[in-house]
Image (cartoon, rainbow, N blue to C red; front, side, top):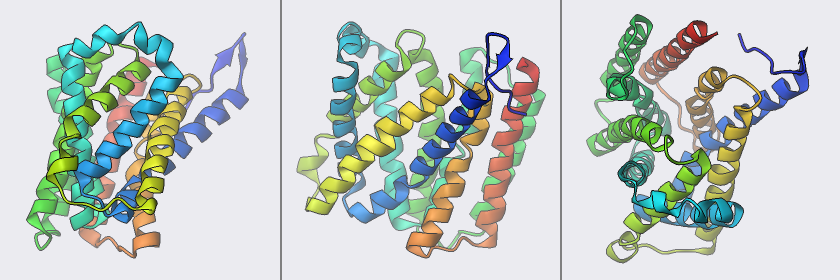
Length: 294
């Protein structure tokens, strides 16, 4: 159950509704990201480079005073590692969606939260019984989906799995990073470091940068990164963080729906079954956390 925000002893339903609208809109935006990666036809490292470069420029304009006072955080090893992981995470994901169906790639990607739970002891967080059940459900989903996709490009499957692994590790490293850096400042440092790391790809890979690619890169940076992140962070001020986490599992749902509508990619029964188990796993684990912290 999502509890409304309370201000001055009264229930602020407008705040709650605004928060719900923001988190749902952010999941819709993020669900559209694979489409734009495919439409750009750029090599994934190049696409990610332009996305993070433009995002860094926009975030610097918005946050420059705060960033300038926190610039020493660029030397923090956790911040540096999170930038490397972010670059790898997106490169693996966008490479995968270009060679295997979006539904398969995005659901393997969402094994990331399971990886994060398995790594949570590194944060001195005990894996609870409910979390263990969630992991079991998630791995059942991954096995089911893998069984139905043995005929797919193995490089695509490996890349999608690596995107999920780097997602999970990134979650753990970012938690360490936010202990010394404000969340939005951290995002700026992550995209800036990612741009630096991926800049050699401009010289190592062959590509053609068209006017359509410029529009896609700008849209991906401003809308799918900066605006979506703003909506996500702002929603957490209005509704419970745990509720935000549950609603975030709409991301793969929207990604699959968009792929069906715009790319005519129809997921098979194995993918649907595995995806349902992964989403149920995430929702169950988050709901269990909510019950214990209410």
